[in-house]
Structure formats: C-alpha cells, structure tokens
Length: 217
Image 1 (cartoon, rainbow, N blue to C red):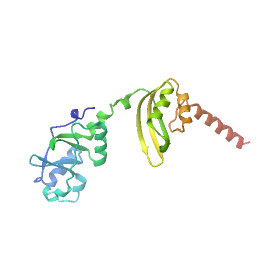
Image 2 (image 1 turned 60 degrees about the horizontal axis):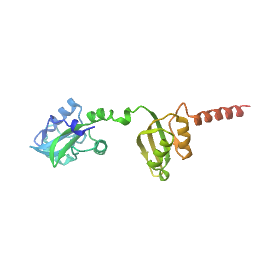
Image 3 (image 1 turned 180 degrees about the vertical axis):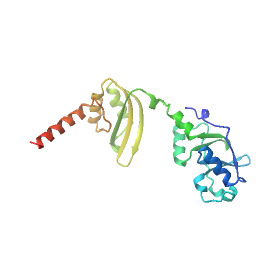
C-alpha cells in the first residue's frame, strides 16, 4: 500500500474565526469526528467534535483553540505507522505533513479499505492461532518449525502480548497440517484454533467420550 495513493488533497478547511456550529454541521453531514483547523494557510491541528459538545454554536473556534490537538504522519509513513497513528490518536483522519508543510488528509475508511487488500489477509492458506510463554518464544524458532514440515509461512500477526504469554495468528501453506500441529505442540505451543485434520483434537474427543461413558457405568 502507498500512503500517497490515499492522500486526499480536496477537503474543507476550517479557520479559527469559524463558528462551532459550522463544524458541527459539516461533521454531521459527512460523518466525520475530527476536523483539521488552520490559521489562514498554516495547519494548526485537528479538533475532535466530542470535545466541542456543550459549547455554544455561535462561539468562534479561536475561543477554544486549547482543544486543538496537533498530530500528523509523513507521506513516507508505512502501513504499520498509519495503523498505529489512527489507534493512538483515536481519529478518523490523519493529517499528512512533509517538513511542516500540509499535504492533505488520509481518511480511516480509505485506509481500512486498502488495508483489506494486503497479502496477509488475501493469501490462500490455513490460519493457525497459537499461544506460548513469552519468555520461551522467538519468531525464528516458529519459522523453523513451520519450514521443517515442508510448509511455507505466509504471514504472522501478533494479536496479544502480556508479561507472560504471546498469541499469534499464522497464515500457512502446507501439505500436512496434523504433523505441523503436533510439531508445534512438542515445542510447547498451544493451538487455539480448531482444525478438522488435527489428530490431537480428535484424540481428546475420543478420550472425553470414553471418560463420560466410564462415569455413566
């Protein structure tokens, strides 16, 4: 994905002299929660409409300039940087600045639409969810285990990390899933996802059924 393909240069600008009501009207009509604010041609930052709740519509924005938050990304930002910035600033738009010069805006909806086309989400292959103690985990070991089973690791998404455990989702192209899952378990990975060809799960089901039958004798 290229951020330059997502930058919208045609947009409505708001000035410090604008009334709060003007911002509310635009935000409601365009389903936008954060608006860029300028002092003539100088970009000042964005203001969240939630922060303007309860303020008179006839007040000028300059009376509440303290609510303006300045954040931005560069036109060379990576996909991960964009995702992090959207999350960190809880914004549906990201201003793009190069050397303090305002370039345009990237909208969250456009980014998510483009992000859905990244290879990790579109690769054909099995998705496996794993959990392991963080202190014992390395990405290199995980890749070696997968590749030792004549499989290809197409992508890794780390979904959760705390002081004790790490959880990941893998996209794998394989020829024998059961052997791979058993190999992962031998290295103390807990398989969180369900797979029809997982012999371990089938054994657990059989043992559980036998135990239930034993208890009912």
